[in-house]
Length: 331
Image (cartoon, rainbow, N blue to C red; front, side, top):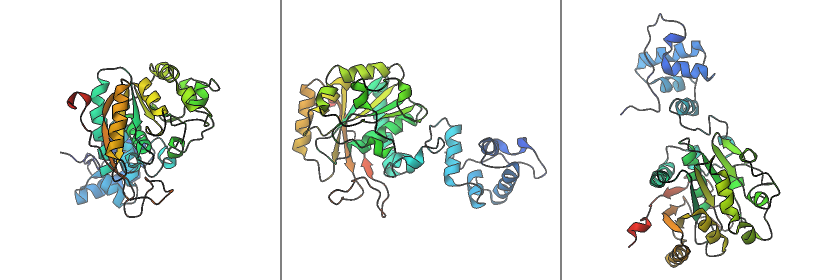
């Protein structure tokens, strides 16, 4: 299989000049204002001398970085890139799906996305509430990563922070939190999609907004469902972050209106009894359980630490997406 990380440019005769001599890759970098025609000629010369790929030759000459190569490839292969759209710098370094797309953690999220894509063939729009029994089990990290993974396939995706107790999505994406879900549901801000921050084309992040004194009442049916339906003509996938299921009734209220729940469990933290209890309660409420993600952070945090903060030894959390049994396989 051809290595797409550093594709081979078309070799050119040494006497050739002009844009047609650069090959497809060289032309792409010139159009992206990454290289000049003279730069491309130098790269192709080194490429032919050493029989290496175009991107590798450019990096050796110091004319391109690994990120530059990835950005242009993303555009060529219709892959929604946060780097190419200038959004990566403000996104938390803990999100491997953005900052280390070839890492083990990112690949696990992509496998989870593939499992969930099966559902998308059935419905024109799908909402998935991401739940965990307790705090600090990684549901916000999984929700953000999964939403990004869908957006990277150019699927119109909206991440909604419905955790009106301890919201974090605005911090992960470097957004203000002056308006958001709470103000929209309270009719204090616009419910137009143009008012929701678009991080990259076709990927929106609706933060929680200011914390209300009555989260459960604001999220009560049919308000949240009506919000999803309002955006459903413009959005294909909704990923919804929630508060802890064992601590707050909000989680069940949100999941019931979303219609589908994905559980997150964390190694050495989540109690199996809590996970089973939360699952039984959701199923009793008529909520479909899509599966369970087993989350293994890169290190054990000290009290008050972000459990998904980058560490020196391993800069990204490890997420093992054991997508455990769909409901029809549970019996």
